[in-house]
Image (cartoon, rainbow over all chains, first blue to last red):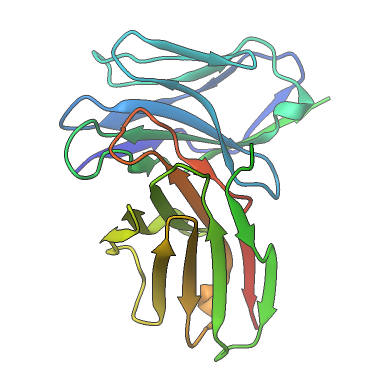
Length: 115
Length: 115
């Protein structure tokens, strides 16, 4: 079945360090891909999305590119801040059938940024 | 714009009691999702509705759990009788049905503790 695999956490970085969180997916069709962020005590918020191959989603300095050839959607940020400390979830949504709009989530990666 | 509204934010009760969680989706959204999040199991989809009709409840743990959506602006998740292993954060999310590239919008969750 369809699935999402993301790197195990926790990830601890110093402020202004470069961030990469790896995400790969398995899908029988052509999914839409998402990154969600969850700050402590809050629900998940959409961070960015990409709906077709080679699309780049970006928001708040974060970027991810939909790579169909490697079935990946890695999250990157050039310079992290303490305020980026959160749990990050990669997710996919299939573009066909009765389950359109359903999200399949990875297990989440906790990021801690130290001053 | 009002987001997804969940109540209560916190609930502490003794095992055996009935628990009712409530959700108001974003106006105009016609898909609604209930999730459970725990440290051990991560984020699990319990059930989702399209146009107030339950589509897939395969994630509901057992018969003690039930969910209803009597109209487009309200849904409940009920646990009766509750058990300590039901302790978790329960999230409700809504989106536009049948649109894979439309993100789900999450509420802030209900933190449930069963003593």
